[in-house]
Length: 285
Image 1: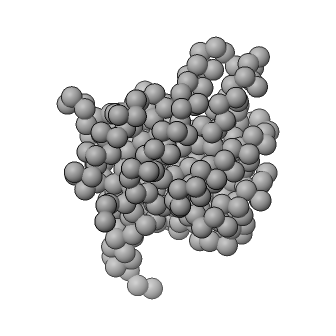
Image 2: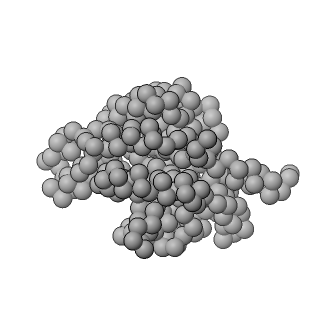
Image 3: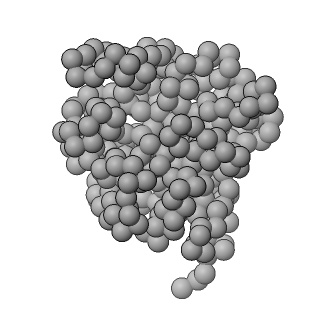
């Protein structure tokens, strides 16, 4: 059997998370999340959904629909404020608020996390301690290449158990990056996935399989909503429309093709051996 890769969705509303963190959430993310669920069901694929607490508050039915589809549900934090702007106590409260809300809605334990805007890197390694202390057993926030806004150059690209600065332990599941012409480049989602030609994406996944390293895809419901940029034409700049909208129309077809050619599942299944290692190393109470 071919190796298992991971597919994940950050459930959030584009305008609130990208343009104005204090804005009310629109209902677009509800319709777009339903499109994602339909696309996954069409391929018989289960995935991980990192749900924003604000999205869960606005649309409990969306969280329940994700659970009904048999998907893994984890946390994207509550308010989508960058962790680089938070103190450890503010992060703790944000995590606990989202965790409690989502667990109540879906009836599943929440023990995984993805930071807003991948905002865990060398500037705030203490965030991993806060995650471990609040009952999170894995994180999927670190990008193993330095970009303009986030990431850690040279970071191990494969999922692994991390010892936190405070001595805790947590599994880190980095998003997919690949090697091309001597460079490590992002390929796991967002603008990278939207703009790479499919032949490059396929090449990356074949590289992962040769190295026996799972590739972790991330996406957002709004990548199934190519008309969204037109809705905000008078509120955002042309540059933002171009940067955030380019490649959306082709995204669903690329992802569908990737799901046809490679085997995907939720992150918890991909990192199951590491979670077991974490269990064995945890002190018994």
